Image 1 (cartoon, helix red, strand yellow):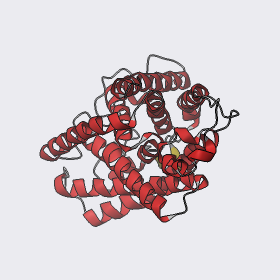
Image 2 (cartoon, rainbow over the protein chains, first blue to last red):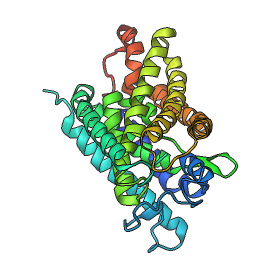
Image 3 (cartoon, rainbow over the protein chains, first blue to last red):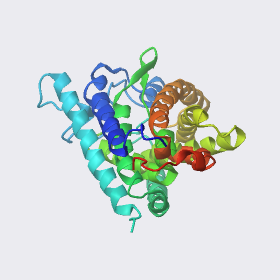
Length: 104
Length: 230
């Protein structure tokens, strides 16, 4: 390693920013077509041709990454994405921090 | 590839639930060896990145989309056991908060998109790594090949599960051909994203990449200098 390499903290900040941009911005222009499994299942008659494989249980707060209580829809998807990133970060980060070997 | 409720029958869903719980138990033990003060925060962020990556659905064929699964990516970045935990947390949050993937199918989804992608992705990566020259520049390309393999393996595993406990009779040859066909295309997208993500971190801080350690270990004496950033 050389002294010109970024500190670990900046790498972590970079990954977080990338995740927030992907979930909060890039996901807004992502494909809305059914995903591979949903499409195959629809083609073979396993399910009705429904754009959401998100209809499994429809009483959750952020159903299908599209909360209906936020308008416009793009803002709702951005809020859902950023919320998801932060919830995953807290849960997964909390778990891995709890499991880590502590340096003495 | 999030399986909704009702695709697989109850006995199969219970069996995959038990398998998922057992795999997470193994991963909790194994991850203790992979995680330290430096890698634990990275692992949380890799999980968040995998969640974000899964929201970016890309078109693969007419009227069909795909998205990152991220198991191979996480395994190369933070180690296979930790990767199983990271991707399982992603799937749990997706099922509970976003209804993406069924609740009764959570075990199935963890087996397919956490256990199989991380295990196949990591084993493929390591196999390729011992067969190729130990160069840092190879790590992102090997991760990309592992990522492709992991996605195709997960789609094939779904077909096996459906053959065991599918809810209605489907022609299995057609299901297999369709699943492996479409997920081979999605696997190319997975490979590209994995190449870019692993390549970005290898370029700035290869020492943070779990899968680069076997390569770096050979160059340790040349690389370490006083005043290293921590």
